[in-house]
Length: 112
Image (cartoon, rainbow, N blue to C red):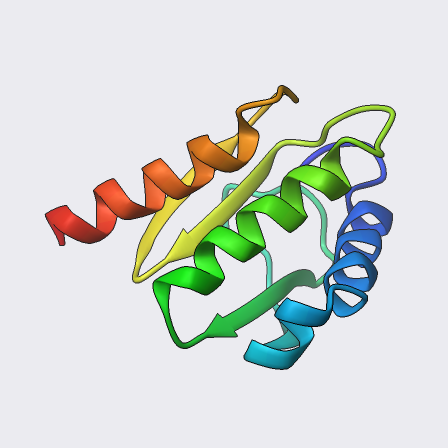
């Protein structure tokens, strides 16, 4: 996540995902911390929320849960989602967020 309050938003998303029974049951959620890339400002470590799942159904479940979480936020942060070495950046907030995430990941998966 990028923007004002990104750290808090990332923690909020993690809590939301952990409270989603389908995700908690079929995915592993963890934190990863690393150094910022040369293009990122700031000297602090970069936190990444990692969600590991075993099938496509969980991508759809994650997408729906993410869209539900996002609808509770005052301002929708810009989020980059990585899957199989590909990344998708989601900006804004609309009713089609979950569908856009799934489509982007499925399309990238098919071209890999």
